[in-house]
Length: 515
Ligand code: XMP
Image 1 (cartoon, rainbow, N blue to C red):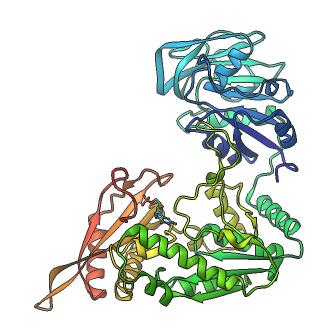
Image 2 (image 1 turned 90 degrees about the vertical axis):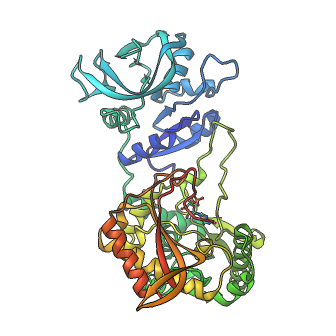
Image 3 (image 1 turned 30 degrees about the vertical axis):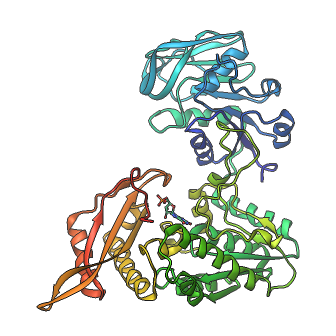
């Protein structure tokens, strides 16, 4: 994918915004990749980018052991845009000086364009103050050789520089952050300076992913564990369009899925003509989980049981060469600020993970895509909206939402509760506004009065969070009226539940799941 389309390469110096730069550029229709700051010149030449962005980062260019790109990066004759730390690297490289700023600038600041340049096309008026996002402790004090100042900010006279001849630019502020109102225009202008042709659209991505998969797999067979979530479903759709019946999807019913999930997966795969094997392993899972209440033990048992079941089924299909996987780009991006190794895949929470001893080669068609791009490709390939917009669901399923020991009665209760909860959220237009909604069964009985009789039933907690990365989250402020409706329906319709509570804990200190 990298060679036949115009690429902007982002070198990562550890800024919290590096991924955002890649996303913004892709939103403008150009493919972009994040690579470690010290990637070799040979690799860069192989990637053949039309432009290079040097990201921000927490370091100072004046540290002895600071992060620097390979020297040759500046001699490749490719336009360069340095952002924050990236600009300071450029300044230092070309003989300017960088000093500790007396007044640091964090957050919103004001920027004035002082000289006309292509980078600021259609952003001007000269002399006007533009709101920009800053995050720096150092500043460029004296101009590097061959460069001109093109803008200043509240606290730094040299807040933007350029060398038009070399097509090298530096910005002290962050154009990738939405608070920088002219940010998108600036990135757009940089792309034009790089003479990039737009080619990154859902249609072109889908087409190219299908072609790539076809080319890689040839006449061989692929198996894929379908989870019912967005990523593996999109992979299934791509592979099925690429290789048709050479793909077999295996969907394991762990007995810990949401209500109707098996039916829905079958329906969708049927409509997309995807070959599916559904394995009902619910008895085995529940049997192995009997008497276990420690959350991590539960996870381990489920992980192992999943792999055993998958292995058994997969071994029935002969001459398989590839295992399909729904790895996506945020899982892959190297965190170069800490170390600059080659691609590291986070294994966090990956219960449906691959059986390592299968000796299958991996095919990961969506490895270069961000989540929103995965959704767009899914839509393009005909996956239904309700699947594409689905909240994340943990691999161990309802097992981590039933506190303590699990049995089929508790699973059934929680399935019904969860179904009503999500249905009410959708009906009232809240499902799409929430990033993850879930219900939890607390194995504690509480009293209630139903039809003049005292009854003891479980407590269930419902939870809704808003988050961008699931690393931090805030509780969604659902209107009381909606919460009342949900509670009434749950108590009336699900026998075995006596009380509904709403969890308002944010993350941190809480986690999203309860176990
Ligand atoms: P926590 O509870 O750690 O959740 O705040 C963050 C995100 O990860 C999901 N999650 C899991 N996903 N297996 C998974 O595949 C797991 O064991 C697991 N635990 C949590 C959780 O639903 C949320 O989206």
